Length: 191
Image 1 (cartoon, rainbow, N blue to C red):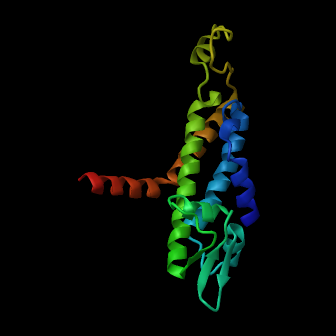
Image 2: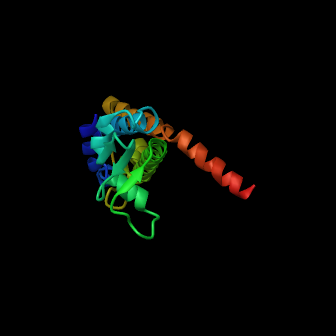
Image 3: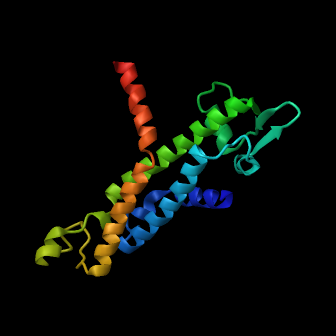
């Protein structure tokens, strides 16, 4: 699971592959992104990071058993997250179990939120989600004058188009709890 998460996280660092993909490629990309979101969601919400040494190796963390605290080493994703608001970057961060669990969950939930929002922006810009309706209906649109994709849908195209939309909805739903938490915090601030 850890190696898959790292590989998929790297693959989806740049979402430009969504932009020019045809609908078949886009559906395949979204299926892989759905798998990535599932792994990230499981880690962010259900795994006990204080008890799972695979998490420690994933994020470059060492557990000091005798002192019962976690040491987060520099130049790791988790260290960067913890240091993002700090004026002075501490080379080593030491945390209690409770602090570590809270920070870990917040870090991965933020990552999940960021990745899904970014993917949603790329999908809104993807040509495969915006075919030329005039071309589909009348087949008289000039592709040199139109920026939209010109396809003649068959059963395969329609199946991939529906699959891509359903995956997009399910992927976006994975952040609904995080979005609800943010909206609640915003409403508390301005109420």
